[in-house]
Amino acid sequence: MTEAALPAGWPAMSIAQAHAMLTAAGSPAEMETVDIRGIPTRTWKNLPPSIRSIVELSRAHGDAIFMVYEDERVSFETFYRATSAFARDLAAQGVTKGDRVAIIMRNLPEWVVAFYAAASLGAIITPLNAWWTGPELEYGLTDSGTKVAIMDSERYQRMTEHLHNCPDLVRVYVSRSTDEIAHPLVKTVESVIGLPNDYGKLPDQALPVCDIQPDDDATIFYTSGTTGRPKGALATQRGVNSNIMASAVAGARAFLRRGEAPPQPDPSAPQRASLISVPFFHVTGCFAVLNPSLASGAKLVMMHKWDVIRAFELIQREKIQLAGGVPTIAWQLIEHPLRANYDLSSLESVSYGGAPSAPELVRKIKETFPKSAPGNGWGMTETCATVTTHGGEDYANRPDSCGPAVPVSDLEIRDAADGVTVLPPNAVGELWARGPQVVKCYWNKPEATAQTFVDGWVRTGDLARVDEEGFCFIIDRAKDMLIRGGENIYCIEVETVLYDHPAIMDAAVVGIPHRTLGEEPGAVVTLKPGASATEAELRAHVAERLAAFKVPVQVKFWHETLPRNPNGKILKNELKKLFEDEVAKA
Image (cartoon, rainbow, N blue to C red; front, side):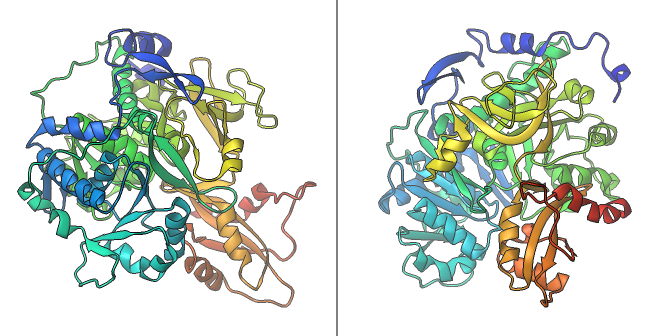
């Protein structure tokens, strides 16, 4: 979209002016400065103090539908009853404030119930990636010291041979199992709360009493690191809930930039509905979609797995206004040949983050869904999702940006070499961020914590620039990581597995550009003298040890030591050129 396509007189005010109006004293988004771990920090004054408080407030939405999954429909009232019942059962197992409770399942209504039940007790909820292998899940459970795990039957089958290696586990809840389970640790979710359509039959009971403060521990979400082992990012109640205000302010800012007054909340307006197509075990799905939906009384429509035709059916049936997740999904919604067979006129927003996206996607969204405003943002596990937001005319004007920081947050571009020198506008350097949503630490990893979190700032590892008005542009990742359809893949983790193969002498993993997924992993290897291995054999070797999305889609063979600079660092930019022919053909 060009400047000429923007409304006359836009923007009516600067980002700073819009934020000042939205956060002024007496406004819902008013800010105040509080001391967080010894650092004066801007925060949302009117933010609900805990995740538990969101559950209590949500009951006011009564019989409105909160969750839809296949033929299951759960209202806000019946969700509250299920959450209270499950919280009471968790408490009976000895779960108290600070205990770790893991959730390992695909997006299901009971995932949501388990999350908020544990949160209501002040437990530290630890969602693990449902795509992980058994050994990866075992690591997550043992590293976190999980006391209780809640999983679906598919994940239970994957974990049966690993449970005896998790000494802190006292109880495992399993949902949707068609077989009787005799394991002494196992109890079925349904024996406690029944099936989702029957939650309304549960007794009307208050949540168990628990005092939870804004800066108490809330969640551990795992993020892979350059050591190759995932690190648990420990977030606070305030950090998780900060996304609620961030999304509200982002929408209001677009109106002010157009010179229009943001609409006031209308209790009689039709219920908002979102299609959740990203996993709850990622901070985007949990913090930026699930929790704000519960807080605002929005309907959340889940899918067993992503399928674009099923998405079309649900958008039409449930009158969904918000869809997206990662650029992959946005592209599929736009380009599927059967899209015209469905009424998708309810769509008002197609937003995404978590992967590189082409600026042409902005134009395509508006062209395909005229009522819909594209949007994106930037954040990471270490920032509880949202740090920047981008939408409306601002996105059309700067389609290669991820937007400005939300009012409670700051961005700095620093010299990547010293991590101290702050660079001027538009200079490229390493992105640092701070705000109340930055996590406390990496769980039980003090050295990694000290390297990443400094005086309230998080060192992101992203190379970026910030322009004069505060819009952030991600240039590249300083960390050796690629993002495939929203999933982080740390190259060293895959390289370590490749090095375990007896034929491998040298290995490097690089990102291969992909139009819809953003990137896919590709590997370049050198074999030991006299050794042999095929591409299929090496891919199978990785697939046996890591989740499927981490498996290289191609393996190239290099017949000498991989090229390195004088410091011994592999020249990955040179290796990426090996895949350019395939990219050009695609």
